[in-house]
Image 1: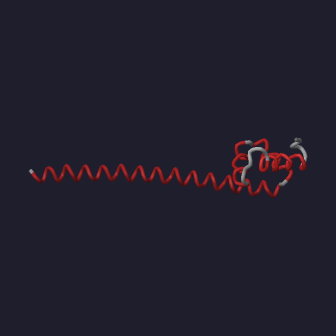
Image 2: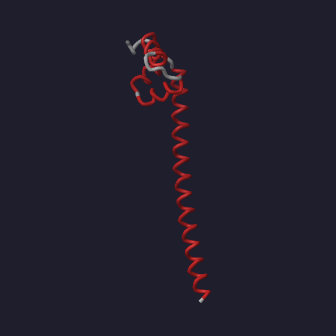
Length: 97
């Protein structure tokens, strides 16, 4: 397959979708993300798809960033919660004596 032509690139994509190992369109998009050479060929022949690819990649990066921020916040909350509980327990223990 010649990825330098639109027809060759489409032939490759159809092989990925309908070939021996069938894939859904979403699975194909994930594979393309791992294979920049193929994704770049699609971008060259279908600039409108390049826009959608970048939007998907940006959304994925934003989701990863949001998850990392949520993980940090959860960790900070957990540490503060533990600290508060231990301080309260030691104060309570001291008061009971």
